[in-house]
Length: 376
Image (cartoon, rainbow, N blue to C red):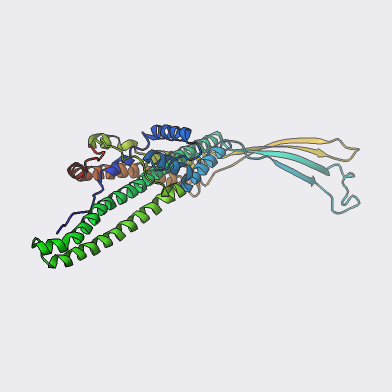
């Protein structure tokens, strides 16, 4: 009887293609634009490039990150501005005893006062706040790039999951057809002496095994379609078109560019944020100042008055207030760079360790590809 392997191996090195998504984003968008131009009412989601573009348009995580970026950009404009001024109104020197008690006009010292006060943070503090706001914008931009690549990667992997689940099911058609031919001709072959009666049982066992594998394949396809539906919605039920991307990944090139990896980029902005926060705390040691202008009205028999004054902060407990906070912020800032180095080093080790697996998968894919396979 027959025993044919029906397990198509998904090449591990396909995952490396996802890291190239940022570089091919423009080509993908061009492909989608051409597809929509040819059929604007029904843009297809079955081609890999279109799948990633649709995922970028629909992913809630990207929408949330876009909103976070917009919020950081909106807050940047007000980071270095002065606080709102204060309006003060009151009565000065109101008598509460004697013949002039509670009179607003008879005593020359009684005044109805209205004034405005403006607090002015020192220049270094305002500059640190502006730098922190800019660093937050850069961090959100970096996080948006990370989220975009993650969406593209997961959408592409979902597409590949559907592709290979369906490819694994294809040989079942030929095997089931072969099994039917065997069972239909078995009686004649037994009568002719070219087959044994026990082969009836073997043929039925093979049919049952193929039915089990057909159920497993249908289950795998359904699960893969469900994963794809998360990214492209109802278009996940459409037939796939196109082939997986042809890869040309050079390990040395990948490792040389790890310091520019999107997942490492946020660390620089996070360090800039921490440095800005430390600069703001350090500026607290210099203190802020404020000015106030007031107009005072007295009784009609007395002249009105105007007053102008300055006030200054006196940070005289720096060792108990500003210095501990400054040390904490500096420690936070100094922790960002080692974290980025460790992340980059970990990626380099992982890339180096996966190179042999990549080469084995490439050789296996070349050796086992079907005649019409797109693999080089």
